[in-house]
Amino acid sequence: MDCNTLIKYLSDYIDNDLDEELTAAAREHLATCPNCRVVLDSTQQMLLLYQDQQHKRVIPADRRKKLYNQIAAIFDEK
Ligand SMILES: [Zn+2]
Image (cartoon, rainbow, N blue to C red; front, side, top):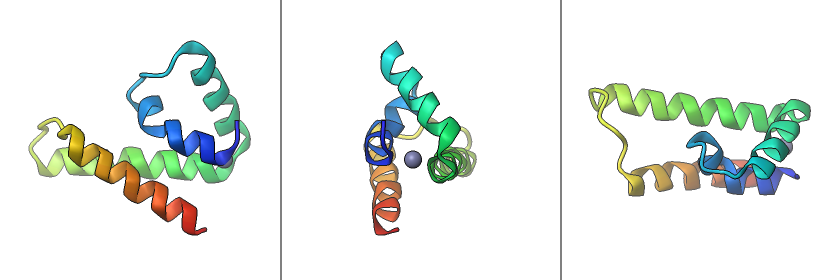
């Protein structure tokens, strides 16, 4: 798996929505790629922060998509 593929699957990875094969591939990539680990960490932090601000309410799907897209855009600019 390369970085672009990982970013594409990042939201599903965080949600545990990937099948076993893709999860394993994502884990393997994350183990060897510090950049993607930073992206994953920041994404999870952002999601947590947002959840705290919203008093633990679940982030609406469209809002989550937006967040993921913003993160993917940041990643693309590097
Ligand atoms: Zn990577």
